[in-house]
Amino acid sequence: MGDKLIAGEFDPSGRRRQRVWLRQCLDGLGRLLADKRFDRPRNLMGLEIELNLAGADGLPRMMNAEVLERIGSHDFQTELGQCNLEVNIVPHRLRGRVLDQLSEELRTGLSYADRKAREVSSEIVMIGILPTLAADDLGSTSLSYDDRYKLLNEQMLAARGEDFLIDIEGRERFTYASASIAPEAACTSVQLHLQVTPGRFADAWNAAQAVAAVQIAMGANSPFVFGHEAWRESRPPLFLQATDVRPPEIAAQGARPRTWFGERWIDSAYELFEENLRYFPPLLSTGEDEDPLRVLDEGGVPELQELALHNGTIYRWNRPVYDVVDGVPHLRVENRVLPAGPTVTDVIANAAFYYGLVRALAEESRPVWTRLPFAAAAANFDAACRHGIDAVLQWPKSGRSASLARTSAVRLVREELLPLAASGLDSWGVEPADRDRYLGVIEERCKLRVNGASWQTATYHRALAGGLDRDAALAAMTRRYCALMRTDAPVHTWPTDLSG
Image 1 (cartoon, rainbow, N blue to C red):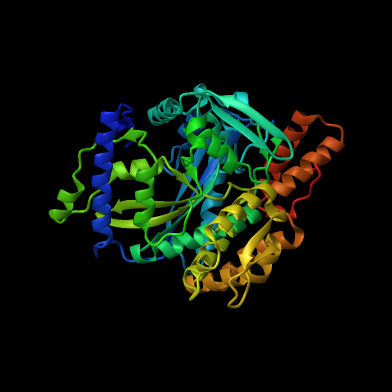
Image 2 (cartoon, one colour):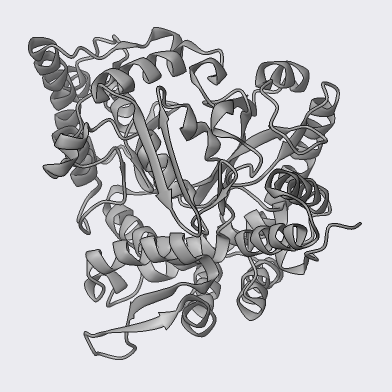
């Protein structure tokens, strides 16, 4: 689709025409959601990981085109920045030894890609934000050689009408004005897909929103923004600001940012797609002239490419996805909360925790989202991004009480959520050995209060105390991270010294 994209029209008449087109797509989706042609639930999950490229010195390498040419596999694709790649794992059924199967496939694929990258003096790094990446590394010339990225950059900059302002105050404050969306490329994530029926979509999405904070608390791995120590998981504020096309005066009036947690629980997938159309002007068009209502009247299944493209330029942390495979439509919840890394074992542990927890919470007779105000879920997400594994969260008290309790993330996970995740994996039919192995990684992180972010910052400060300056300490920590990442030992077992 990428080579067919055209710019969204920003004159009033052009915008009206495109909105009419998108409204037809939305009407088609509404009819289709009541249809019996949606794919039956097959317990399908999918996995994507965005990757960084760095040299043996720990510094970024802007050479994804050369690396992809060497890899020569459709499983690996470009991402926004020349320092990024993305790997896609084919969908799997959530049952049996699926977690170990995914782990083996990822290790094999990433090991191969890393060998090919080394042929051009580069290495594959799974990390939320590469600590050695500098703001000056990411400008319009560092975008990948793909017209869709160039066009998206032009349209987002035109919509904003001025530079994008990055201003993140954590343990240190970082401010920067960017003339492009390139700072977004610093943020590399794991995306977890879950295929659901229309009738089960709302429960799955609400459950995913409710647990987004604990995902971040357990899996934070992005404590540095362009060499500055910021939040424990700095991707969300950086991504939000790097894609924020609202001029400041419009933002002050309450317009929603395109990177969005949301503002309410939902009753259907349609509500999310309708919000996307109501709140966000289109940036791009496919130029396709499909009439979805006519396609439905003729017994066909519309592709809804315009709606899918528009949906793809709105960066919800749990995003609804409509797709058609072999002529059959389906819906997915795309969970975009987690940073990449640190190891394959850590990634699979995070995935096991998520899929088990969503299944268990979605099937509760008194769902958590009926007892947890949405504003509290959003506040939890912010707290987890700021404080990582040390976050304190609001969660409904046990029993029939409607009140909330403030509890540490590690206590909440160990005492309440890990047992739920285990029962959810049992419901999926995941083998107990896989269940116990990967949920055990989450439990050990809680016991030791260690995740990727806490390891990075502890090792960095140890390097500073050893006499290195900021840049040298970040580079030394990054090199040590890369070496330990390749052992696949989970991050809670890593030493914080720079030797070895």
